[in-house]
Amino acid sequence: MTVRKILVDSSNVGTIQIAQSMSIESQYDYLRSFGFGQSTNVGFPGEASGILKSYKKWQGSEKYSKAYGYGFASTHLQLIAAVNAVANNGLYVTPRLVSGSVAPNGVQTNFDLGPTRQVLKPETSAMMRSLMSDVVCFGTAKLAQVPGMTIAGKTGTAYKTQDSGGYETSLGGREYRASFVGFLPAYEPRFTVLVSVEDPDPSSRDRFGGTAAAPVFANIAQALITEYDVRPAATDLGCPKHRPAELGPEH
Image 1 (cartoon, one colour):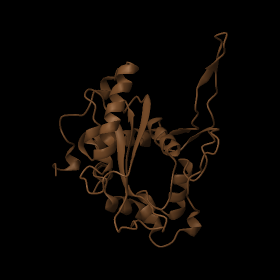
Image 2 (cartoon, one colour):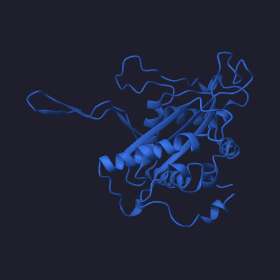
Image 3 (cartoon, one colour):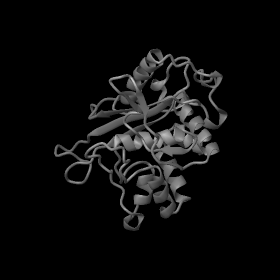
Image 4 (spheres, one colour):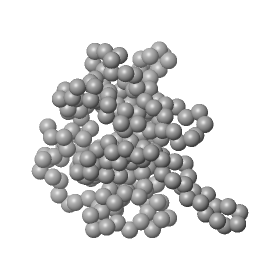
């Protein structure tokens, strides 16, 4: 299974196989470099830092469960900042709430960017944008597509942790969190959007990130395109007609 197919199909098994090739130290360092387990320092009062314990305290299968998103917790702002690094040629930029201010007399003051750090090579970032656009075109996020615009993103579907520390509710069921995060245009990004749906109907076929959150993203993306007159470059004109051979036939 190729890395592209692992991401497009959202394969936990494939993700575990990738994690097997990494040390827990490097896995932890990557998570930290993308901003997980620490405040973004955006200056918002009471901002949470998320949960990511030291790799020295990881036990059993934690190395593998963390690879597909379990065993640590992030804020929405942390996740958007991390995805922005992928969209921004691998450069992590500390998020900010506003880019500037306008005084009553009309004088505009622009605020400087916060600290930055390179977390991916630019060529790796470019490859990730390609992989994430295939997630939307051919994988679990087809409902995030916007005609005439290439979208890059990733779905997420997770069980919600209960007060008991496990995933089973007091009634013996499960509660879900369905999400989709994406940016547009995929190759010359202007916007990143995260949609998180809390407690979709657990009995519904639409309880997943690709079915509950992705369509909401598509509606928001279309509104952004219209409101800000986003005109895609030649590389961002939507999904190709043919599925890449390495992804295999449609299921």
